[in-house]
Length: 115
Length: 116
Image (cartoon, rainbow over all chains, first blue to last red; front, side, top):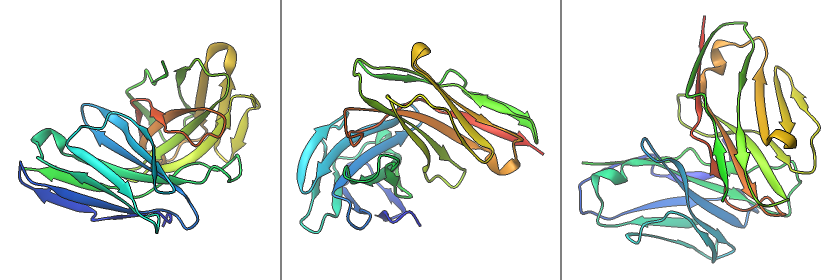
């Protein structure tokens, strides 16, 4: 168990629908990152939140949004889903104040299948 | 712009052979961090190592070793005496900035298959 919890593990939904993916970071970690892993795009950074505030955006579609709550858990909202949104979505957490040998800790991912 | 290249898409080796996975990176920052992650068939991403741009010392951890060479912008990963459990996709990644807490840019991964 990495300490980063993602729910649900699997999600199957129809095109046009909206889903919410949830991430609870490691205890004490203030940063949450979302990544998308798809067959054609590989592993891509979507968005970074630090202590409730958006810090950086990557290749995140306008149909996607995220937020980090006061308890530091984060949610990634995907709307108007398309077949191409089928992917493994990872959440990672980190705390910059940690040892320089510390690496980002990833959750086990949510596999989204859009049918 | 930052970029991570893993030219080897797939590698197959016979158990107990040594294997090296290549990683070449591009960045304009003078401070950056390099990572290797393992993704076994179960799908999770497992952290293996993080190295900052000011530390070119090679590292060895059991059967794993890493060779960081700034002169060639490479951060190669060697598995000695490979085992079937090493079969996975391995990703090299780059994070720019001083804290290393910025987002990761991943290479496309190398799928390693160790044949018993």
